[in-house]
Length: 445
Image (cartoon, rainbow, N blue to C red):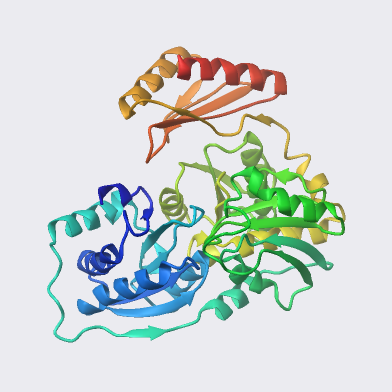
């Protein structure tokens, strides 16, 4: 069972690694760990999410906690419900973008503060392993139902500032994105839906916009013409990928910069975070618009903590997570899409032209190298430190980052696999290619 307890959630293959017994034990362990009395629980459309909910609720109520069943919903709606319903915990049953055979649990404290490996998942794992559950309550908790989708969508709509009608193609990938798109109802936004039917078998393509091949259908639709942009949602709709009016993919860090521009119109001088893999252009754009740019390490638990500590209004991550103070300092893919719609509608020019001046550098993309062990990864980092750290501006917020006048790189280890990940950017495509190959040669030597 140990393999299912990850850095940011609990996730595994349903029926073998993760079972109804796991869900029952998790319900008891979460109540034991937090002492929570009211838990909001949402779920995605995977067939296994229904029995997992039932057993989680049975475990939690056995120890006296009340469970509010949110039913089918997106992960951003589960975060919204946590605060809106005054819960002291929330759970989203989902395996996000993973294939159909997986499922899992995303856990939060009150106010949608995430529980990560370092802040509780390891403790919960230990409680389950040792069977150290709190005693059963004399009066068990109850299960009730609540639908927070309408209130969530009304909240998102309140941020609309559309100067003209906007037309968007939406690829829902048979996941939970249709719940997010309901926020556009009643606005001058026309949507064309691709694969809107929720189906946890994901029959059309993987629900993962990080894999560019999954965007092919969306690109084809947009290229038929008449769209301002396209948006693709992942399985639980807490991530979004974008294509411009030509169907060309817009890098997710460039979307961070664009959304920052929209937010800084109404929040002048605000603090905005970008993850350390992002283009130099993101920091520069935030500063150009009068904001206070701050760099974060990778991972939603870390970013949300840094946002709260610095009263940030927004953060963007290279993986397509967009975090808003307006949604309990958590993701909202619909608010990200609405922000892009606000910008396009006011600009008088297409998205491709808005992106062009921000897309000013040349990035390698994230390149993974498989290593034999975590020890091997540390040896690679030691070698990179020896070769580059003294020659540039080095820091270790997350892995090793080194900046030079015309290029930079970050190398970090995966939290879950024996992988080392390289991101590199330069001011010219020639230097990017040369430095990419140079650093990769050190990593793979």
